[in-house]
Amino acid sequence: MAMSIRNSGVEKQVRDISSRTGYSLTETLEKALETFDASLSAETQSRFSRLASIAASCSSLPDVDARSFDEILGYGDDGAFSL
Image 1 (tube, rainbow, N blue to C red):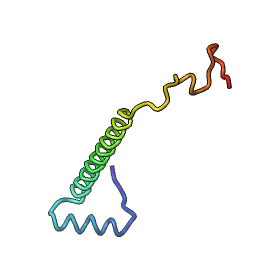
Image 2 (cartoon, rainbow, N blue to C red; image 1 turned 30 degrees about the vertical axis):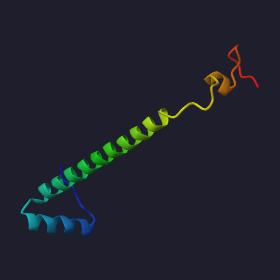
Image 3 (tube, helix red, strand yellow; image 1 turned 180 degrees about the horizontal axis):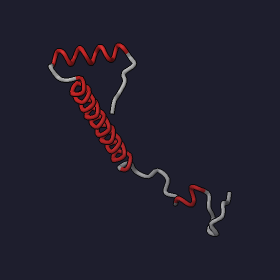
Image 4 (tube, rainbow, N blue to C red; image 1 turned 120 degrees about the horizontal axis):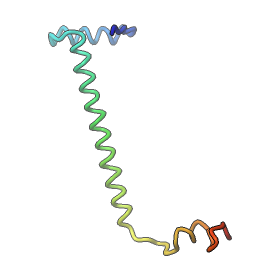
């Protein structure tokens, strides 16, 4: 499938890197995309790890309200909302 790069700066950069590395234009773009994809995967994993750490920290905190979920939400014994 053909691709057209309409941004002259991007085209110049791809051609420059291609000429310096000896890779074809396609190989240059492929390697750049693989590197970018790997960095996105690493970012996602890092974000997931940070969120898991926060979740573990929060779940270890003591409950400060001993009421049941229904009591907190305001549902009575009949399942209806009550004040």
